[in-house]
Image (cartoon, rainbow, N blue to C red):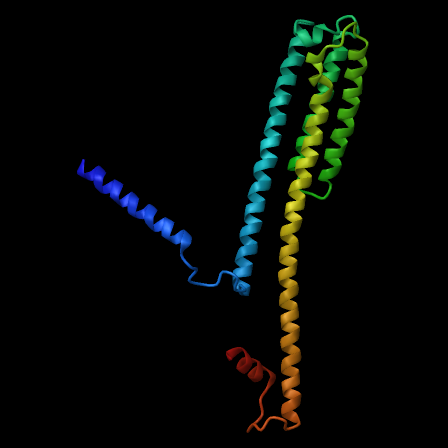
Length: 238
């Protein structure tokens, strides 16, 4: 009991300190400019986070597509060995033959595999894979919708047959676009940092050159002569 009392009192003191911190004045200026090393560390941390997020979400959506592929393989197996036993296939019993249904399922698997290839393939051509899968998915969707509209009654429970592969490819294209935008923003931030460094270096070069010209014309009453590196060292030491 005494131990619980001490723990409660300690938590009360910590919460009291936290409330005081909320209303206390800042002890340092958070708006101060950061130096080059801090900028480099910040950009590196952002690049690391962006890379981790990219791998995470690409892996998540690739895993979902693989699960859909596994389901389609099961569907093909059932249609090949036990034709028309699955309800969503049995609706089309009098419209198409069994092997046409199997071919359509294989086409849906192809769409998913190409989408996974484009989502995980690190190259400048990965968008071609994604858009190719979207085009094939559109063909599969047209096939299923054509036969669904020919049924005596439109079956809403089979709507995933045309929209499944196509929507999967479309969602992955959108995810890839978002991740590329995030990566581009990080690259722009690093480019801004390098551009700022170049401008600072150029300004220092002009400043040192001007100081040396002034020293040559005896504007400064200094004893002795200084090289460019000496003057730069003195400026940076201020």
